[in-house]
Amino acid sequence: MRAITKLLLFPFVMTAVVWAGEPVLYEVSGEKFEGYAEKGRDGSPLILLVHDWDGLTEYEVKRAGMLADIGYSVFCADLFGVGIRPTEIADRRKCTTMLSEDRPKMRALMQGALDAAKAQGLNVGNCVAMGYCFGGTAVLEFARSGAELKGWATFHGGLGLPDGQDYSKVSGEFLVMHSIQDGMAPFSGLAEGLETAGVGAQLICYSDAPHGWTVFGSDRYREDADKQSWLLFLQFLNDVLKK
Image (cartoon, rainbow, N blue to C red):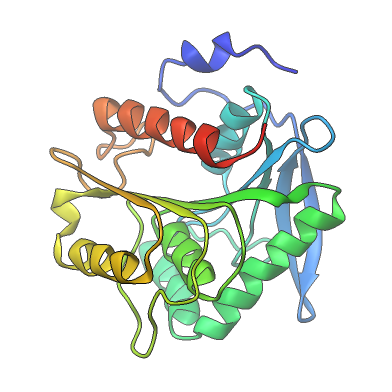
């Protein structure tokens, strides 16, 4: 197992990513996807990590490594498909819009990623799903489907509630980390929905944090908000998962 000191002293800048895990090819409804797995010890708690709107890239791999450093297994989902890692804004918007307009497919892809993690021998019965930006949208969608995970965490994710949906079927604990600059209306609506559902939730909103504040090396990156939200997330994992 990697040393915990590596995580605690992590400088929170983007450096070269070492792929210590392995790519995982899997299929959902006949479509091919390429996830990424970091396997801890047998039975270790699992984090299902969901990418933002540019697909599964080195950013998610780096975050997976940070979690593996402290003993978690991680499976990074692929919601776009093998080789689909859009770099242009128009292409990113196309990929995310297609799934946002087909919520059943989004749920199926999330379940497919979880099934792929299970096929790798990872502990899906002791699991938290977490996502960045569009990945946060997918995490909340999966939660509303009634999937029975221990917890759900989002970083600057999309919080809007599609027509005809609510949080009546959710289970597990929620940690939602948002930005004031992303707007408070969906944040308030989410809070009301989770309160009505009677589930445990922490909803945190950061100031001076533009959308995407966790993205190392970008002009949106905010070190203070990144550190605070990451440490809060680690405490959340410690609270809801069985070690």
